[in-house]
Image (cartoon, rainbow, N blue to C red; front, side, top):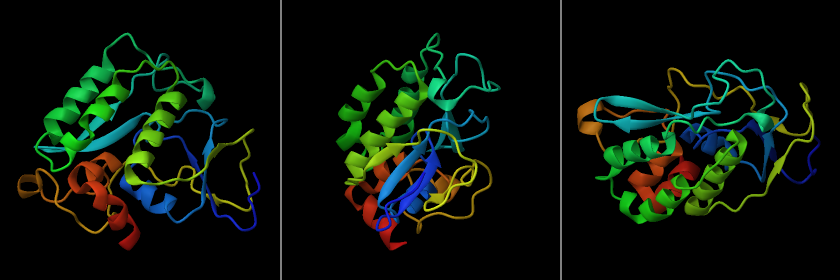
Length: 208
């Protein structure tokens, strides 16, 4: 896992519609490297993201075929498609963000993504990442690890450094859909910033 001497590489685990803080870190680098040979870890952003609802932060969690306690290499983690989780996630997003300024602008493309079938969590997360990067205007090479290394050099190792839980860091406050009711909620998925600020989202990330 060595980097080009002239390029800043961010090494991080695969995440489901990553939190805003992950993107704040990502845009300071030139190349994104996804760890695919680690063991799946529960209580992480690997299969969950958080969005804003009328009563506060809501979780969207991708069900896994062997449950949250599996010790499977990340590239082999399978999604449980027995329940219609994509439909449920989509309905939650529509309910939470249909009044946001930019949701309608992204709605058709995002719904098409949620209509696609995925068997592996890594593939789904990559599709979400590629969709989001395209909407933010981020054109960054994405590569994968070819083996697991605990200690790496020449890259920014952000694995296991961005975790769910109490969040105090985030971008400069922007106007959220339910802010008058809940106050500003930090630590949400990049989708929240995108739906609320649209084409200004990347500028907010860069200027914060």
